Image 1 (cartoon, rainbow, N blue to C red):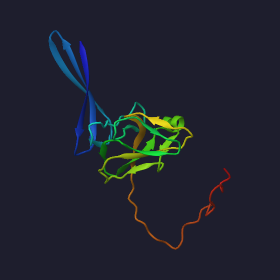
Image 2 (cartoon, rainbow, N blue to C red; image 1 turned 180 degrees about the vertical axis):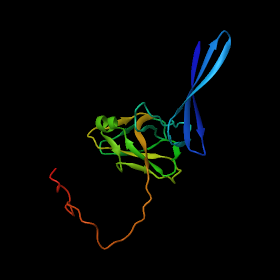
Image 3 (cartoon, one colour; image 1 turned 180 degrees about the horizontal axis):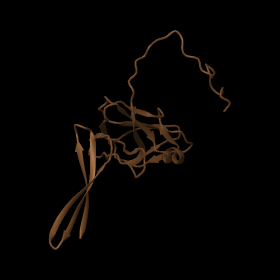
Image 4 (spheres, helix red, strand yellow; image 1 turned 45 degrees about the vertical axis):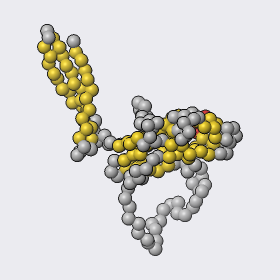
Length: 188
C-alpha cells in the first residue's frame, strides 16, 4: 500500500515555499519513506489578517490570476444598490504584500457584465505600506436595482510588481513617430 502526502515548507528568510510529495510505502508491516522534491520557484507569500470574524480568506481557483474577495455590509444583511447608486462594502481583511509588490482590486468580470456593478474608482490600489482594512465602494451603473448577497464573491485581488522611480524634470523629451498626437491618432 502506498500513501502520498503533499508537504509545503515555508522558508521565511528566503521568502519561498518548497513543496514535495512524501511517499510512504508499506509492505509487510514495514514502512519506507521516499521524498520526491518539487521546487515551486519563487512563490511569493501574501500575509492576510482577519480584522473581523465574518471575513473570508481570499482564494484562487485553479488557473485563476486573481484571488476572490468576499464582501459584506456591516449590518450582516444582503444589500440592494439602486440604479446609479453606490455602497461601501467591507472585506474584513488587511494584507501585507511581498516586498516590491502592491495589490490591485477589480470587480469580477461576471459581476461587471451580468450585474452592471463596478468599483467607484475603476481599480483599487493597495500599497505595500498599507495595513488597514480593504474596503470596496461599488457603483451600480445599470438601470435596475441590484442585490449584493452577504459574503458574495464580488471582487478579485491581483498582486503586481511595483517599481521605484526617480522623477527628473527635463526641458525636452525624445522624439517618436507618434509624437504628441492624441486620441484616435493611430487610426484605430
